[in-house]
Length: 65
Image (cartoon, rainbow, N blue to C red; front, side, top):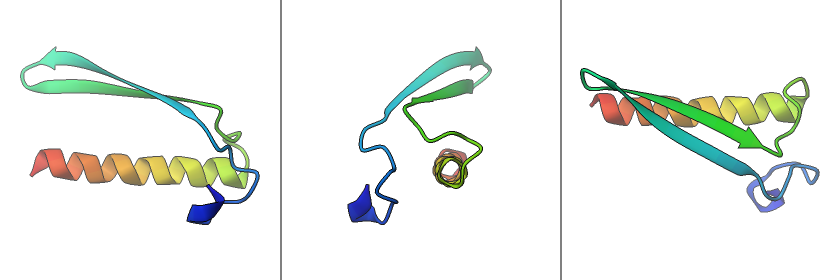
């Protein structure tokens, strides 16, 4: 992570599980579960959440287009 500008204490490895559920009518529910992430009440945790949300927003834009 430090190579990409992350703080040295940011976890080197994390596990992310993404599941998809067909809701019918052309809709899909996506659930993202992350493990070994910084606590959400820390600055690193808030930044990690921000980055994930930015990625999800970009993905939504791709699928909407």
